Image (cartoon, rainbow, N blue to C red; front, side):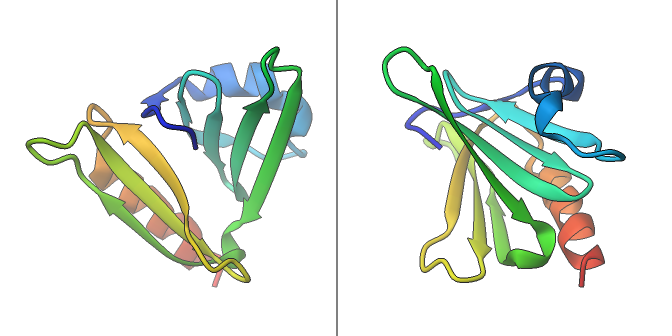
Length: 122
């Protein structure tokens, strides 16, 4: 998701901005935003919003249901590493989706939330 790390944002902001993409009963549980792109986890899926082009008028939504996530990893930031990394391996994709998250985010909380969401859908 871009070259820059994402910082956590209030899920209410995501609901306000991207509520049109949510279905009835879907709640945003965690969200991250970089300069242009946004990623968020709902109770049903992982969504990556990719803002494209110079003007940002073209927006791509990539939606991954948790049942399609075969594996995931969360790496905390190290001494010389500026951010944490989230990797999601999705059925049918040879490489993982990668999200760089600010070192201020809690990787243990992200790990726990993903485990609950991915494992509950099995």
